[in-house]
Length: 74
Image (cartoon, rainbow, N blue to C red; front, side):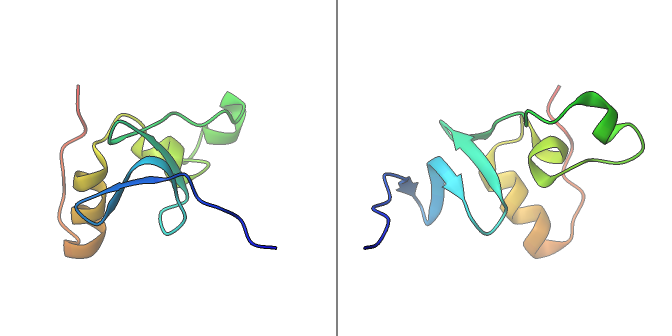
């Protein structure tokens, strides 16, 4: 038995669902905040989802591929 994905893909990226490559949940193209306790991310991000929360998925993909600095949205 295999898992049936309900992820929505747009332009080759996960637009709604779980991006297994980046290990983040995406809703409407935006990385969602993680649910880890705050103490886990005091010294460094606890996970990619915490590090990229609020970023549009296309900016995260671009930064990881190109190794460029992408400003964090305000």
